[in-house]
Amino acid sequence: MRKFKRAMAIALGACMVASMVTGCGSKSDTSSDSGSDDATTEAAASTDDADTDDAGSDDADSSSSEGGTINVWAFTDEVPNMINKFKETHPDFAYDINPTIIATTDGAYQPALDQALAAGGEDAPDLYCAEAAFVLKYTQGDMSSYACPYDDLGINTQAEIDEAKIAQYTVDIGTNPDGKVVGLGYQATGGAFIYRRSIAKDAFGTDDPAEIAKIIGSGSQNWDKFYEAAETLKGKGYGIVSGDGDIWHAIENSSDQGWIVDGKLVIDPKREAFLDESKKLKDNGYHNDTQDWSDAWFADMKGEGEKGIFGFFGPAWLINYTLAPNCGGEKVGEGTYGDWAVCAPPVGFFWGGTWVLANKDSEKKEAVGQIIDWITLNCTEDGLQYMWANGTMNGDGGTKDCVASATVMDMSDGTLDFLGGQNMFDVFGEANSYANGKNLTQYDETINTYWRDQVRQYTAGEKDRDAAIADFKQQVADNLAVTVE
Image 1 (tube, rainbow, N blue to C red):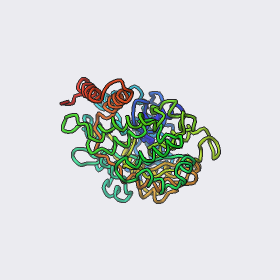
Image 2 (image 1 turned 135 degrees about the vertical axis):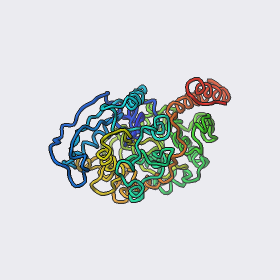
Image 3 (image 1 turned 30 degrees about the vertical axis):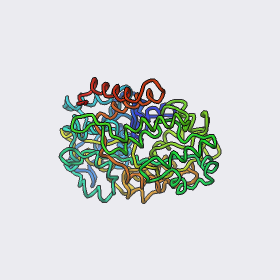
Image 4 (image 1 turned 90 degrees about the vertical axis):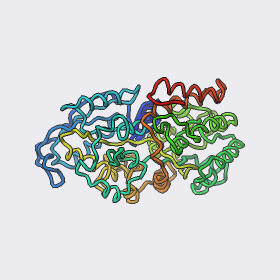
């Protein structure tokens, strides 16, 4: 999400890719594997112009009426824009907002944020954002000591989580080693299979999401039916996915263990099997052998690749910020617009997302808590998530996206012309419940890059399987403070 993150920095970089995750939330540059949104924004710091002379309102604490400045750090303008909306809808909130936006491109955001948190003082972040690719560093890892528990911000955290029915994986990721929630997201990035209706009809005689889900092995927790479908599609001249990256996120985030366990590198069997899955796709001609976030990958979204591609695995932000801008049209009948649908995937996974945190040393905790609560937990029609889900943050007709609150999703309409009139919330709501947030580590962004590079070298025939694994381990040992055996 948009989340979002590196995924969106590129996706949106071509159309405005940011990558998220954020997911909606996430944005980031091309080397990151998460999120969504405009991560191409240059580093910046500015002060909101809203009038701050009004006295505090009923829902503003006494400190809010005193005014001041809240420093916000983010990797895109998504969260700062949300806070501007909060101020617009809460005119008695007396604080100015000073946003610092540094894109995740080339790894610039984290070092700058770390330095600002460590330096402290009046210029330190009061509120800051982290995407899925590195969020554990700030909630459970090296920088987690700076994160303030939501309970200390004046938020009735657990009660509000229960009322909003927040997706559990987002709670798990945002919980610190002491069991306190220190970060939550606004976007839900549970993944589904997003496929072309016309290709489904040609290859399988139906484009019904329930039937296609069965054909690709939805809920089977294995890839057997998926490869049977791939063989059928191959017989019709189609590829089932564009490249091996299209199954990577499903494999990565359905794994039982993260890359690091008790300080040691672990290659989960499902992640190791990605070597074999990638090779199977390539050797059998089941894809166009593209790399995600490349021009060839985008071309497959508009049906202009070497062969027609059936689908992509991803969250709702992949539809909104990547597929739609790269489908070759803006309304039904143009390019592949309207020729898409979503169904449940073979395995549950998530991809991307943005978590919002507060600095434990902030002197404006209650005011920061009001903002965070409105973004991450408010499940009324006046909260950010309702506006986000229904595309109304900037007026009617905006982009609809999946949100962390199932309560809000149940209140909202996820029908999209892009999906041939399908309500995407019917599929993504369930997908969010299957996502697992307990297999991440603070080093995922770096380790995933090493792993995927070695897998591609192996499938290209540049080295054998054992050499790929050995070289991967050596990269980790040489560059990270991790025990490698």
